Length: 239
Image 1 (cartoon, rainbow, N blue to C red):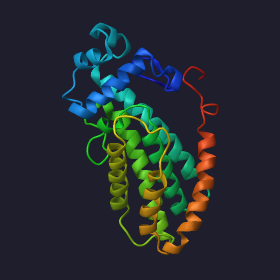
Image 2 (cartoon, one colour; image 1 turned 90 degrees about the vertical axis):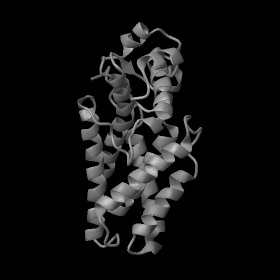
Image 3 (cartoon, rainbow, N blue to C red; image 1 turned 135 degrees about the vertical axis):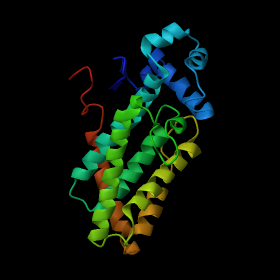
Image 4 (cartoon, helix red, strand yellow; image 1 turned 180 degrees about the horizontal axis):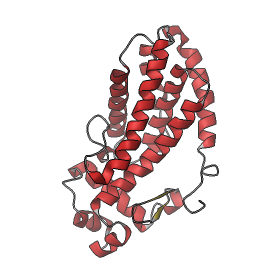
């Protein structure tokens, strides 16, 4: 659950996806992926939803507010999750693998079309309206680079530029977004395992240790997923 810039509480449970705010987000996300943010108007979005523009503005004051809400729904989960992963006592290789798996699952199951939310290399669009979202994503990228740097220092990974790995991870995520298409997968498919395995295997100084990394990653995934379950996350209504 999240709150958009107009103060409207957004729920993304299956039972609430047909609410007017979520229908606006759904149609806007599809239009953003087809025509880009700048190529889509609030009139286009209202027409796709089947409402008048004044009704759309009742929920979102601007087109920027719509994109900001979509980014928050994606980034809030990403930010909470990587912070939990980072606090664990597992190795950096395990942490990175866990992050990769859970983020791919999130992309595949995200209820909106994520393809049009980010610019190339997983960047938040420019503009003061998205400064909070850029800061949040920059924090995630910083944690990924720190994981890689720590793994290199400890000899877990081969000697490689952490920023290069961060860019590789971002490119992989963008690829998953576009391969997924406009609709969420009914269940996360084998890409959620294969791609992290491929990336981490290539980074490991000892590739034969991948099996152990995967085993520990699965344990960490279970812990993090339990911590992020709806029953454990304070909602905006309960703060």
